Length: 280
Image (cartoon, rainbow, N blue to C red; front, side):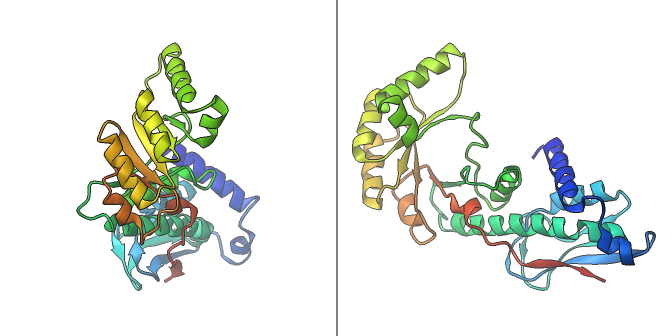
C-alpha cells in the first residue's frame, strides 16, 4: 500500500466528513481538553486496518498518542482492546467514525478471506480477490484480502489483459480475441500476462488450439467440468475457477487441481466486524 495513495485517501475522507467543522464537538468540548479512548472488539474475527489507523491519527493530529496492542492479522475476540488513543478530545472525536469505518470493513474482509483460505488447507490452490470492490476503497479492500491470507488479482485494468465474455464476443470469438491481443502487445512493446475466460469445455479446447495465453479462467463450470478442463489443460497454462463458488463448495473446486479460485464475495458481499471506539 503506497503511503501517498493512503494519505490522499485520508485527506479526501476527512474533507467529506468534516465540511466546515465538527460542530458537535466544537459546541461542547473545550479545545484544549485531553482524554483517552480505546478500540473495543465486540466480535470474533481477524483484525485489519491498524496501520491505516496510525496514519489517520497522525494526519488529524500529530500529538495524538497511539498505543497499539494488537496488529493487522491478529485474531480477536469480544472484549479485546486493539489500541489506546490519547490526546485532544476534539481530535479523537473527529477521527472516531472514519477510523471505525476503515477498521471494521477491512477486518470484515480479512475475516471472510481467512475463512475461505482455511477451507483449502493442504491444497495448492490460492484464493484471489476480484475488481468487485467499492470505488475509491479498492486499495484498502485488497490490502485486507492479503492480511486474511488471500492473493490479489489485478488491481486495475492496466495490470494485465483479461479477455472475458464480452471482449471475446465483441472481438468475434476466442481465436480473433487472442490473435488481436498478441498483435496489440507486440505493436506496443508490452509484456502483460494474458488471461482468457472459458465458458465451456469446448471453449477450453479452442483456447488450447490457439495458445498464446498465460491463464485460463473456468467461469461458472461445474465441479465435474472443472476436473475435465484441468485434465485437458494438463499444466500447459495456469487455471482459475470463478463464478458462484461458496465456502461450502470451494474445496471441491480446489481438489480438481486449479491453481487459483477467484471469489468476488470477499470484497463484494462483506459484513463489517463489530467494534467501537470507547471513551475512557
